[in-house]
Image (cartoon, rainbow over all chains, first blue to last red; front, top):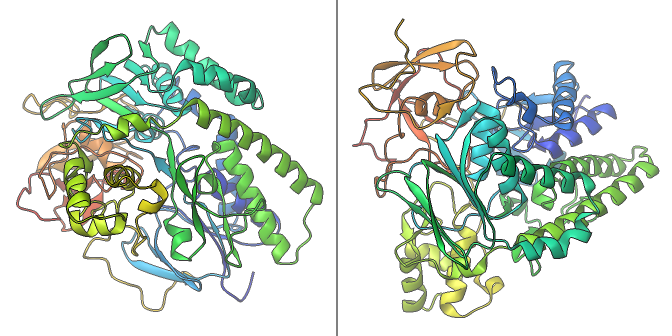
Length: 460
Length: 108
């Protein structure tokens, strides 16, 4: 390719890798930026060097093939690959990123495929800020990417299919699992069962996880009503309350997740329309069926465009790339697009069923104790948030942030934002949508003070 | 031979390496004490294999040991003796890396 700014893909997870491969195979040379040293993202992360035996078996065939295809295209120069590169700001002409040298570099872009992924939905449990408490994705990253266990005995708390998958992966990896405690009730799963049949692969995977846990005699509790992490200075155990009784389990680490939250900072910087979705009670960036956003030349794929699992994420990356090629006036195989649409519809049905089977336990969030920290960066408690909401009659989350510092810290409200909005809405008796969402502020990740800009931008 | 993975002064590491012995050793130091990471390992893994936490950060000086491990919660920034600060979950351990966890006077 010569002349003109490059097509840029942000994120090299399942969606970004698929988009890059699709574009490269059509003769474009996309620039791909990702924060991590290797491609794969969270879902399809490469196994640790030296991770062998049972750990290596956790790396799926699809994941391995996608990474190899991507790296082969990068080696032969058909993908312009920038690992360890974090995008920190974005306009409709240019983007800025921090690379491995620690400098802020920039590039103009002609078209943009955003694949920023998702992060864990956290419900602040008593004790969740103790060292030894990690997100579920963190536990998987340590296990698969680093061949490490977060502790000697890990409790899995929260809800969602990934909770069961991660716990089973740890058993397979030879790690002791103290308990799997899920707030979802078995009934919800049974009601959703027919819809889950739409994706036999994911259903089969789920059943296999349950079998692995049963064979290892891991205590499994469903329909959990309250959860607490216990310990002085570090994790010593968990307390799980079911309808019948209260249980205690000794452990030195906790992995927790209540689902996933789309990362919308990058589309937000470009003013891609973002709206509240009643069904999932969360915010989403609008994309059409072909993964175009309302901003010309900007496409959104992967978990950030909808939480449907890694396989579906890869399909959306391919779909976004095909749209981009269409928009460039290149020939695109219509049958391929039809096949993708059908596959994605099936994944979407399965995802909706899973959403109903593993709902966010809003009761748990409503009952957050006043002394429980909501914002871990700024140590803002639920009580402080409620007090500010009432005393100043605050009905909007950005106002509450200004008054309490909730969401103002290092993670920029990524983890506390959804909970803080719920606490605020409940304290004021208003709709969750009306409470709003935290505004995106560039740079979207903190920068060390020593970071210097590269004059003019050298990337392209 | 002295095993650098052994607890220092009875302090046990938080994480457990599951593929012990694999990978090329990477010598580095924590607060001046020699330690050993493995090639390809992120510095958080190398540190927490022998330490219970990463020290504390403002505003409440709560001790921390990382949280999301995917470079977003910013819980795992550590200071190096050369003045750099790195996010330990996205920065690979390097030979000669000198990590300071004992700088409690530090502001973020």
